[in-house]
Length: 365
Image (cartoon, rainbow, N blue to C red; front, side, top):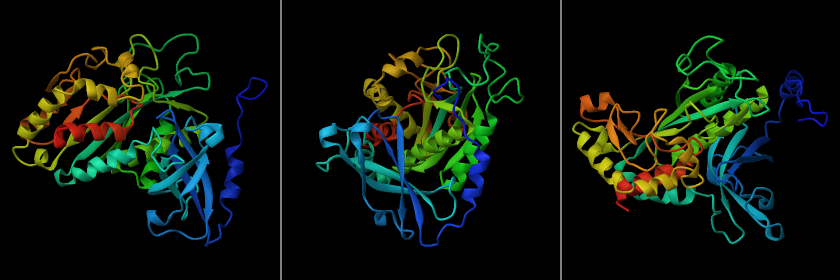
């Protein structure tokens, strides 16, 4: 907000003439991206490289002020950015890159919210099982005042029913952002597989996957970064809050579709059922790992209503969207495929989610 209470905006058209300026061929703009101390906030800053690195290992380690990102004390604030995955930059184009990083402390140990390190170690142990993931990321669009985008300022839209996968100006709000984000993901190299309007108006979903192992977390975090950046240009705020509106409105989740090589082969339903049995015995552990506040956010969402299971009970069923684990009907008919874990919250860390699933179902930890 500007000092006079008005929303501060810039003329995006003026930016275009600068983006059209020729960029020197020996210069690359590398946007370093990392997860801050909240476990869900995304930060980034840019540096110029004198050439385009051929591999992620050639990108330089960088640093930042951790005292300004909830990750360090001011008296010892240097934190280190270790590049781990590279994507094309859809905002700057050309050879410019998005550089996803792991965060390390002054003592070379991973930051508390660096979940990628242990996730990568677990995926390496389980690589022979070829674990695949697909995450359905739900989110809500808000105006600057925190009110859902397109909702009446002094009231509510009509009850849920016409909005899911809706078409029409009176049913969906913010499709421009969704389309721009989808194209930005494809350009960047994110394995985005679809999108749709969700049950609550101003709520949308995109899907990332199938991704094997650690790439699930990498691609979803970059997709989230792109969503926030695209929405920034439209003057809209994105929230991943699992229950952005109290009352008779759906919450937001990040349903995780999961399979191993054995599950995907004929007769794989037996491996799916065995995995569900293992998951049933570790329900509390998974709930703790499925949102940044160790279940407290999901308490508002997993109520047993609005297409959710109860946070307190484990359940599974074919085509049951009110269960903890859903077996798609087609999977039950084919006898192989994947399962859907419907418990992760919309603001989950995908590294934590995929790690604990592999620990439980493959490594038996």
